[in-house]
Image (cartoon, rainbow, N blue to C red; front, top):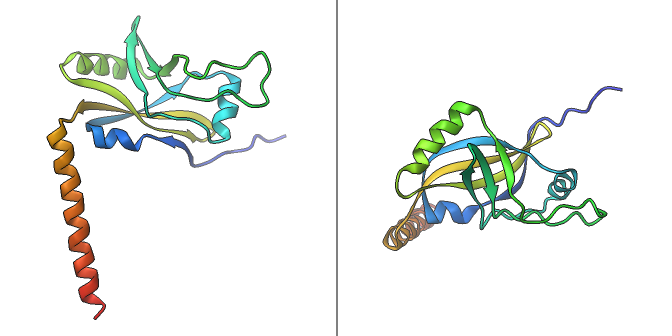
Length: 158
């Protein structure tokens, strides 16, 4: 029997707060080493990236703080919701990220979790934290853009 092809990208979870809290410098796509019940829970569309981050331990990159709830139909083989998960990247990418994260203020933050061609992937961002005044400035710019668009849209309909 032919294998089904799950072409495309199916978004499971996104971390919208990360773009507000950090300056995104670069993004990477990484695979994730998951247990069977974690994959089933993700296919149901259940995950939270809000408190997640990635860190190096023993020369490997690990995803921490990401919440994938237990699979409802699982048995004693169920996973723990906030366990550390290994991220799968090429060695050159790992070395590059390791040197970048050693610089002050840089961290690795998950932006989105999705299935690509049937495999679970995560979009990681090399990011630097924003100060409070940067966040206020970004909110002000967005509000100003909305006001301009609203004014132009109202003017064109007359």
